[in-house]
Length: 595
Image (cartoon, rainbow, N blue to C red):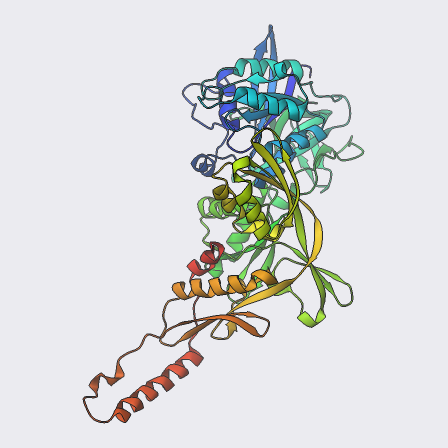
């Protein structure tokens, strides 16, 4: 155990975590020159294309230092705010963390929130200034920021470059010297913390764990503490670049277990594995249950694919424990699922993965957050979907979730960012200058306002310099109304949204205009209306496709033409009663991209 080091890499998005991990794998010869490619630990095509890490990955490296061989278990983590749950799990399985700060950008919001998470778990922090080879690196400034944040000595900060490999050897030495070995008793009853799981279509569900106490041997009879299901450990082993089977693992080791589990509900991330005979007294507490922030309906394009979609989402949930779902139905779209996501990027990634990995064509409804609705009897109903809203006469008040948002930006962009946040109903709480030209602004604002396009607008307002992080602070009363979209006086439930009273008119107007462009012309007039309750607030009309019935009338009295046009008008009216308007899939997606 004294030769084991478990550590994770934490940083803001794009500060060079994966590149540095690549250099470590090369230096410790964990991966050969022939197999090497960039972003070794990112095994999804999506991760490579977007250049981001979506899922945390564990890998074991052997490193020789002063004549002894050490086992280094690295868990690479995502940097985007939407995947902070992955980070919390990796931190729960480690004793140390490498904090990477980009020398050209300095400390960003996500760096700070991930750092606090690591400090709460008493991890040993090793600060690193990365990308020192770039001509615009501001080493002294960034070092000052790290010293202010951590309270460490300037000499403790290591300098490195993931691209050239400079300083990586020093990082590995620092990990061996500074990160404490895992504490645990190999003789105690078995306690393993599950921090991840993946689905393999041939071998069932593979759970990744860290052994806190005890020893696990191949063919042991084990049980999962929370679900109380029992299994045989058919294969256990450690995670190199591939899985490497072992006969036994003991306290401090990070590894995997294959026990032929078929159903996804039996594996819960955060559960404890223990022996059936000599079981431990209590489960390990490591991290909290994840709370989804954004909800959207996912429906199959073809109604027959409903069961396939359910199976696909269940398999995805194994790879991504932060996804939640429950069945729901809609008059416009049929049967589907109400899914909870951590943010908009998370939602986009899930949609892409359903398409690529499971070949599912899906329609996604307008995303929204969950509201607490108080009835006149003071009962509380949690509403994720506008159609779940009770009648207006039965409602006392609606409360919406609020967040505490931290924005770190260059001082030049304070004005546009403040305007953006105040337009989104934000209240300024605090403003601190971190250094001469970097400022941290703190706002309290409704979560619903950042769901749509806040992140994109923040990036454009600050020319890409601002970084953003948030956590929820609870619920507050709000003046919310349900905005319905009617086509020919029939409500399309998939397009209805809950929105603040002040923004309802503009959104209704925009939605009508957008739908007018997207709904194909029919043989009859199509009325597109936005309504709040019984009050229509906006209207557009898609004109009918008409035949020129007066073409055969030549000369003569105008009443002859009028008679033909009246006859056509009656026909159109009759058609409108029987005809129904199909809303194209593009329309559902376009509503998400309204500016």
